[in-house]
Amino acid sequence: MDVSFLQEELKRWGELIITAGGSTFEIHGGDNVQFDVQKNIIRFRAPDAEYVLNGASIAFVKMHLGHIAE
Image 1 (tube, rainbow, N blue to C red):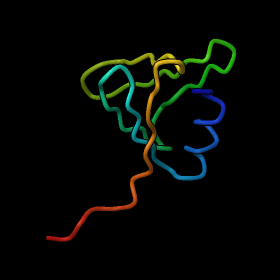
Image 2: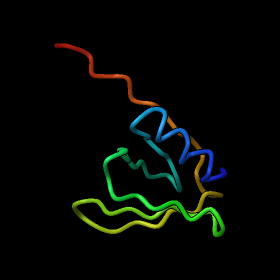
Image 3: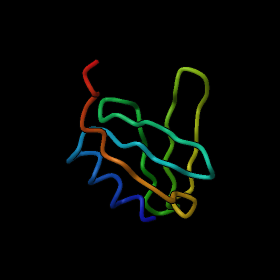
């Protein structure tokens, strides 16, 4: 997937839930996310690790609309 498209969607939605390589990642607009359009990669840091995602490995992107009230 083209990371420049994902960068625009993050600006529009404010949050992306990305599935890549069988793992799911949640990225927020306020997070320190770097989109390298030339290399087609996304870099970001989570509490447990720093991640580098190859845009070609991204299979699915979801917009999180909210939580179901219990």
